[in-house]
Length: 425
Ligand code: BJ8
Image (cartoon, rainbow, N blue to C red; front, top):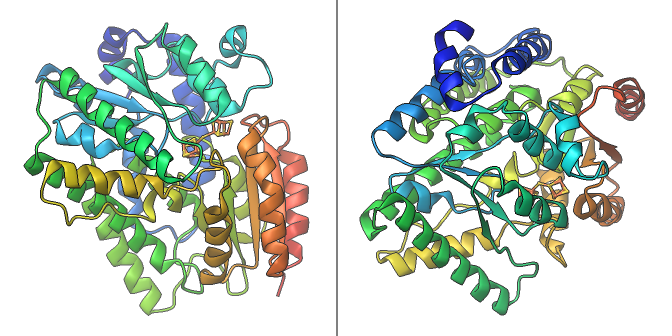
């Protein structure tokens, strides 16, 4: 792939040598974690293809779209209402931040005790390693956690960054604030794209993104089956890719994969032996290529059957109502849907606890692993409440705090194996 796209990467301003090394590491990592799996579904070939072309074909599509006048807008949080971007003929790209690449560069600017996700997106930009960031006309930041919002102020010096104010509570006054922010964002998108968002294009965009969510809901619905018909690693990959692939193509391909899974479920065929421990992952989002913990879990005799995360059900659980006919009505539907997000940045945040408990029961899990990035205060602190809520229901919990380095793999494996051992049947 390197030679084929080298000119494009150069024009985007990447550091070619460093980027080449990154792709080599990623390829090796992917082979070990993904391609080594047994009984892989045929439909995963599409995801393998997209991943191997992660900085190739999709970037070319973005570059070509820009030549045709479309704008590419990067996001870091599932709170950004991407429907407005698509309605204005823009392209929304969820920017990943799941690798430790360029840590030193990031730490020249940010304190060492900043969460790995923030250091990652910073590092990618500083070291000129990410063609997605370089392809964006601008990126959208948000006032979620303190680390992100302060980092965006500096990030703006390297890449134009538009900030959305996200409420911290869910009272009426917060909804009013959020609605005004959604309207301000709509105006920004219209200004940048030169396109007016009207009821026709917004309706289509809402349907397109809902369709993608519906497909991911369909995929998750099969994971209730025992034995598990797909690995957690593969579903994580699918969710990760949903953030940057073309939504219509992605939906079609994942529906085909779902057809295959449906047949497996009907025949009671799984990807793991009977009696394999069923676990739920809950907590911080896992951006590409953060596959460390899922790999440890699934190579320790367990299978992940559901994710309570923004790269998981927090992003797919709720649809935007398709009832509205006017732009104002549709904006209200968007506002209401996004206000349901139960990120730990909200206070209080009882919905998240309810979702964790009800999802653990629905998927009949043996236990929950709470995953928080080190120095992430919202999730590390909320883990206490998660623990209490699960204790009440007698659902075992393992709390993990980690980052993107490989230094703690041995220690994590020991802890995960001991946890899984509790469920050996
Ligand atoms: S809606 S979870 S995508 S903010 S891990 S950067 S919280 S210190 S990512 Fe998130 Fe939006 Fe919430 Fe979802 Fe801060 Fe924590 Fe780091 Fe985090």
